Image 1 (cartoon, rainbow, N blue to C red):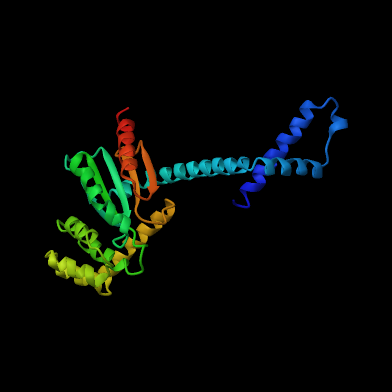
Image 2 (image 1 turned 180 degrees about the vertical axis):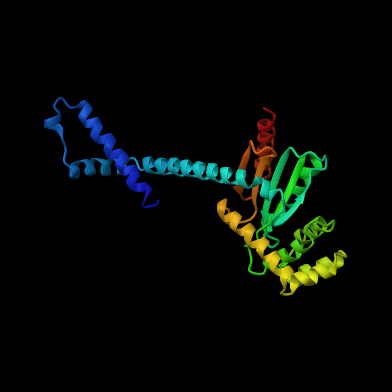
Length: 263
């Protein structure tokens, strides 16, 4: 239990105890208790009913989480046009040509949960041609993850990106820059761009800037781990941000986003 929530719970109970005494006593002057006496009443009550504190702390946490989620959603709503313009990742347009729902994934190629979620994310679009996918590079899982992200960004906006992304997500061990370069070569991706991403220069510097922008945006959204998702209606009417991966949760939010955009 945090040092902040315990005093809040105790203060609330002290107030209840004091008000109860005032309300039930025939004479206010005769029944006023000292602070020490009230504290003893509260202490005894909590010892006999410890579940009260846990319930209070749980309600406090739920309220804080709801406030944080609302703040993150509002921030994401403002950044939605930027996310859809591919600042530090790759947009996979809705096959229908008219996106109704946008699903953004912040991911790391060395994130095991991201690898687990990869096929599910692509299946969302395969099952619904009105879903636009945005893959947002966030190399935070391993210190070697930045290299593969640089190489992926070097082929962003090309036909090879999705295949490269999926091939790296299917890799079952650590991916560093050399492993990523080998995968790119096997796929026949443009080697000039790959080499430029691996060497210091203006091109590599521009890729680093895009990655830094993505990490700054994640900070703004309160995202500190991967995978993390934003599910939004294309018009921005509905926006939710959450960390972790649970397929039914994603599907539920997509349904909510569709309902919100159709009202």
